[in-house]
Image 1 (cartoon, rainbow, N blue to C red):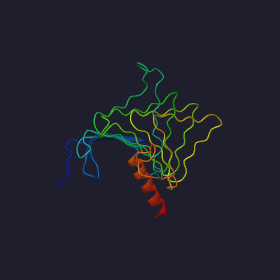
Image 2: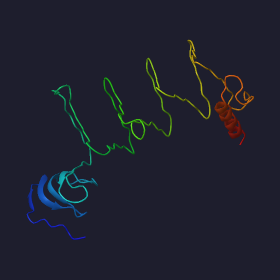
Image 3: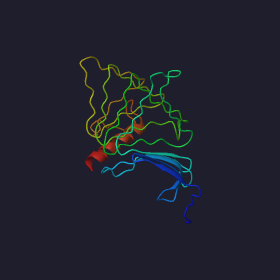
Image 4: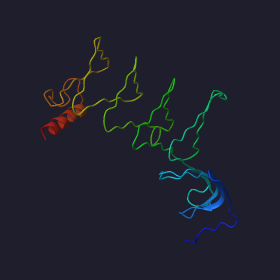
Length: 203
């Protein structure tokens, strides 16, 4: 790969900071402008804001802060908005591999507006527990709703437990309630599922 040339490179330095134009990075990408600080510390990362002109991230803004990156705004919101982040294409990736991510507000909305097939989904995945606490919790599905647990599934209340349905079927997962295929209000598919669970528990 040919080395990127900076024909009109210019740089202004003080003992505290630097402003560079046409600076070529170690990865051969040219920055149109870089605003950085000169800090004599044991930080590993540099401290700068860069406008990338060439390379894979051409047209990007790169921020590098070895300490805290903080945005403080909203003293006078416009149309009720204090901050806007719009990604016209692609994903937004927020990571804290060695920390915690906290969202705190008067109200929090999580909306997924896809087509309901390949998009429009919300996935919650945790290596440990998922815990919710609220005065009132309501889950509603327009199609199917399923709650399952390989260990224990509990319904605990000091009040009333209500089960309402056009057809209510109670089955033992270990097969104690498995009778004739399709017997009673149980469908053949439900009976087959019960048998699968029985075989799985034995294996």
